[in-house]
Amino acid sequence: RKGRNLGLWRARVISANAKESPPTPGFYDRDINAPESWMLELIIGDDSGAVVDVRVPLRRSHADVEAGDTCEMVVSSDDNYFRRFDAVNEVYFPQNNTWIGEYPFLDRRAMPKVSSRIARDVEARTQWEAKNRGEGFLDEEYL
Image (cartoon, rainbow, N blue to C red; front, side):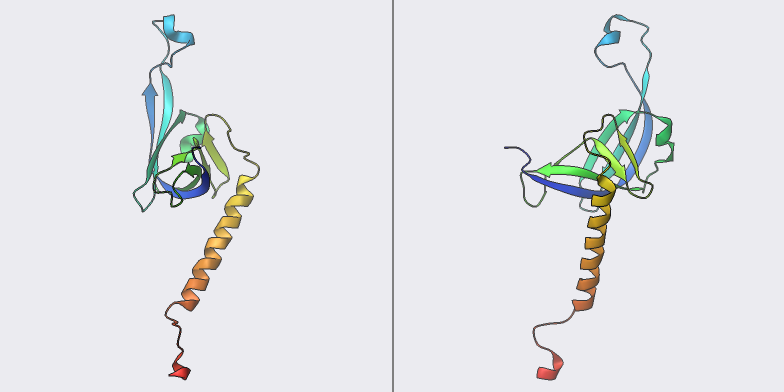
């Protein structure tokens, strides 16, 4: 079974470029004068070196996307540590609750709640680790 583990990948936009794209196979195959279409190509990555390339038809709402923007994607992997993974071709931008994706594969209504819940859990863990950093098994009063 492929992709038995699911996760939410927090990453950032490395680059966002509008590109001309030849017509896709199908309706325009026989039309020599078929119009070129424009696509938004997002390169998304994180500090681990993982990178995903997302291409979607260009829309006006994509004008605000810039390199450095934080984003999230649902990913699946057979590896418990997600060293290799596949990403659903939808990108969520939690700062402004917007999506980029050609087709809504995910329930977009649920994503803000999932995203904020995970963000709270990460923040709580970070605070707990900072509070307990440096504390060993033996306190000074017992030495």
